[in-house]
Image 1 (cartoon, rainbow, N blue to C red):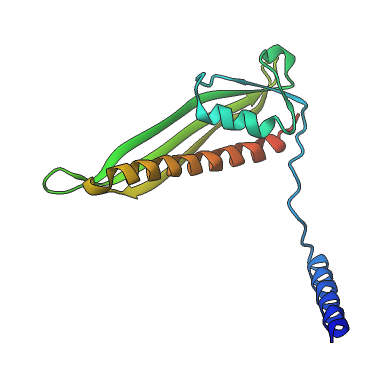
Image 2 (cartoon, rainbow, N blue to C red):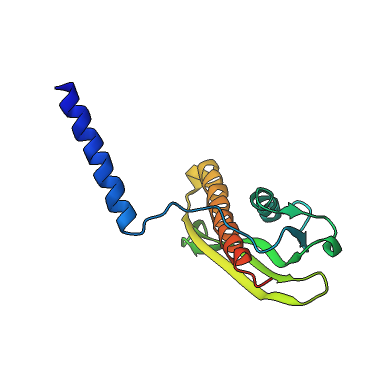
Length: 165
């Protein structure tokens, strides 16, 4: 009985492998960048976006502090988070917040040749809120900003991988 179960399990695994290989399925590979060194400029010293970009890029390329030593210079033109009241009650209490993450970047060579024109990334999320759950909503707001930032970093990494260097 055990032998039959093992045989059926092996047969099922082989069939699943053959089916996924036949359809062109392929695991996502780490990105391949057409440059070896990059400099990040224009970001605020305490920018969470810059910190996440550095962390993600450090696995694949060398991050240099001086733009003249880099193959690509990624310059931040805008890097900010905004929060505004989207809906209020008749009593003036905020019921819904609008969270915005704005990032505009461009990529150049150290000599100034444009590799990527300015790209504006604008993410907007809505957050309902109540006065009784202020602490929980503050933590939820921070988590939403973190997720939006992860999305911006992923988009920038894909754009950097496609640069015509």
